[in-house]
Length: 153
Image (cartoon, rainbow, N blue to C red):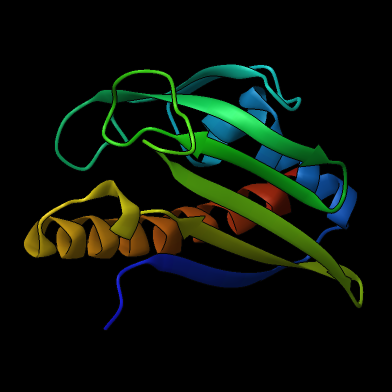
């Protein structure tokens, strides 16, 4: 198995605009993914994602830099995982959320690229890949559940 790029898909019963808001704003991200989020959701915006209680093994903070922000269509950022300095194309992973209207809802595709390029040993690469794969599965389910609560409130 190649451990270079993760790709996940989930159908969400909400408009692409509503899903975009939930995946691109710190207030919403802190409800379904992280414990805290603080960043400017515009290209070049930077900040942090913080996991405390939602962390799997220890609390940690990850710096991010927003790469692309196209409302209702695409949101991407680079993050340095594990935590550290400012994310750049040479030291970070690229996460991209792509939204496609689908019937009355949205098909959300999430990709995370760049693990192989980090130069990790094979066992470390596989561990990061499997950990992120499980994490995205869990958090995307949380995202769909969170969006559903917004639709009913």
